[in-house]
Image (cartoon, rainbow over all chains, first blue to last red; front, side, top):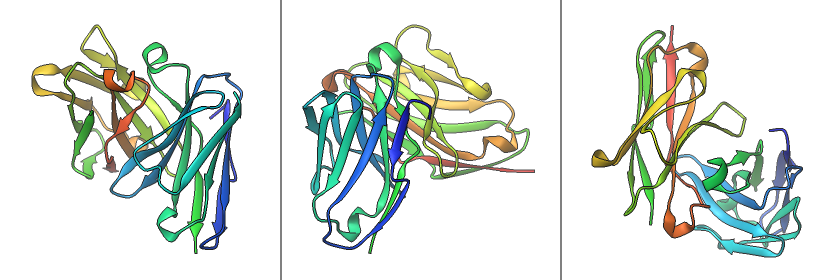
Length: 114
Length: 115
């Protein structure tokens, strides 16, 4: 979607290696989120950020860390990738759900851990 | 904590038929409710939302949904399906105990439209 980009779009990595996914926004929105999408589970929140250096865990945060050193960038790191982290990862942004009524999503990163 | 249940992982309709996708939520206070659509290999796109006010909300592409507090439901409907409606649809909820800033998604319903 315009204003939010994820990189890379596809990645294959080996078990045990660290991986970093990037989410970049040009909307100057306060809130940023990382979700993973898996069949039968819908989207599950990994971590989110409510400002620079302000982050919090979601429901499936084990094995993941995040950083937000600038408003526009939100990085998701898999410390040591496992096959269970094979998934499609979506970044989302929001200026405030109460005000704008929802998120804007990126196009996703398909990660395969072999 | 809020949660949503989407009944039916797959729904099949014929082109021109009524579309009904079901969503029930659990929340101790009136939540905010959303429907998103996902086309293949794309991110999610907001269809419509209920926050406050009118309980019947209209969205893009002819979809609408009605918030029914007594039934804790927010079902998505469209009077006449089009082939281009084939996609996956997600219901989502946010509530006061998360400051309304975190959405909890259902598991999704894939809509199949046949000619």
